[in-house]
Length: 73
Image (cartoon, rainbow, N blue to C red):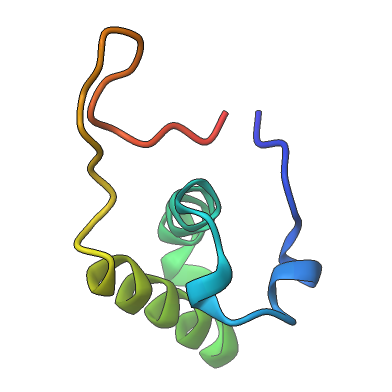
């Protein structure tokens, strides 16, 4: 389960101030409901995707305690 800032708080911030976990969570959530998004929702999703791409994706270096995928829960 996601524990973090909600979309109301994040919508008042620039996307580059979001954490990787927040980007991953909201990208996944919006991706699941893409067919049902209105124009505003689609714009927010596109901005999230652009920020993820600007950061070079959501991959992280694997360590002994974590894999390469960013987990938001």
